[in-house]
Length: 101
Image (tube, rainbow, N blue to C red; front, side, top):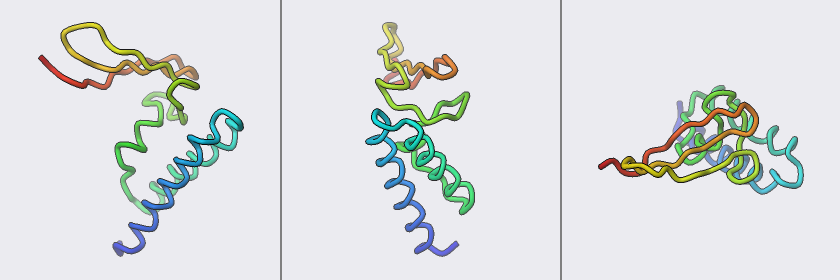
């Protein structure tokens, strides 16, 4: 794939996810549509979505989640410092480990 096309797809994905995050509270259907468009673009052009954009999708139901609105974010209280994210659509909880002792 040409690097120009890859850069263009990356830029469009970032714009779509940013717009989806800003529209999530006012118009959740539009935000879901924008996020799914970004995901479809990454699959069609075989461009891996950056981690910052991928973490806005649930790992189980693959829906677009917005921290504090469609997902609950909590800090883990154990030796392993982690963030627990609970999707409010499918109620699945997964962890992102911050620091390991």
